[in-house]
Length: 408
Image (cartoon, rainbow, N blue to C red; front, side):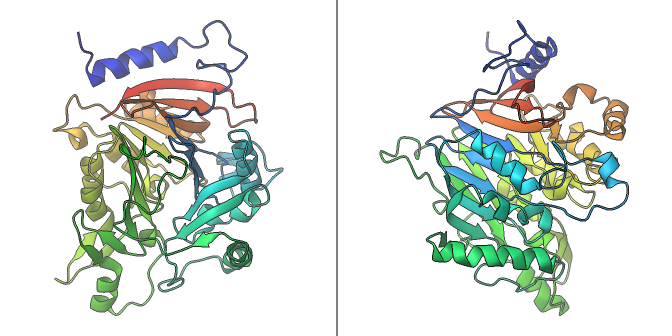
């Protein structure tokens, strides 16, 4: 008898709850074991939690590597450190911890792609630290060659430090070119000479700098039209974030930086930019929360369009992942119309007690992943995937949670 998605997930949750099988202390696939690493044919997405930044490292099926954002927040408001401490400690900057994490995953000292979603420090300020250990071969940000076209709320000190690293890196051979919205062949497999995986793998560039792909053949300059209609020259960095969708077989993943906000269109009316992009994204298996799930983002219409089975989210302040956005992300009515609709698992890096209480109040305690690094491992061919949670309290790469999913 074929098991439907709801039964498969429920069975997996029950299995995960059993805990350590045999007290594994070496490399393995169970709770208590050391994370087994990547193998050819797998797609790995590592959501590396530092408590001060958002950092995603990916290994594609052929071994192509990509770092999407690596930040650092050096000025934490009073009370934030107590609620969300740096992980595994404050002895190093976030970028240093991220570089050390990546070293445990790959033997080479080159990373094929580096991408910056937008110019907020928690998304880019840690990259020069990673570059102390790795050479990046290809680079994209959301604005080049129009850097600063709408720039308003950027930490100038962090931005200047990054630019001082960036220019020499380009002179030393790192390729830098505009991020082409709508393209599906700009970020591509670099180690697949026969095209074996290319037939079932693609990355679609969906949006950047307020320009979005319409899902067909056209681009829409949403930010440009907003400026034309309102006369406002400056736009917050968040809605200017770049966004991509990854497909591997039946698996799909969306990530869009801090995408949110409203723009005025040619008709003079405001509309949600996040919702418009969500319509183009369509249903996905895994979704990185927009703007850390801060309450202006993760609107009902976006969740209804994407219907993810799993949300990945990082946090560095206690007002992120609040009850309003959490309620939208898990509301059953936002998943209506799908086959065997489920309420999705949510993976946070740090889980303060108030967040656990929120899940309990919503009856979702069984759908909260453990605290730590979140790793999505998609099987060869892309018809199923696992969520591993690795401890972020130290560098042991020890598994503290495992859950299984069938692809959408």
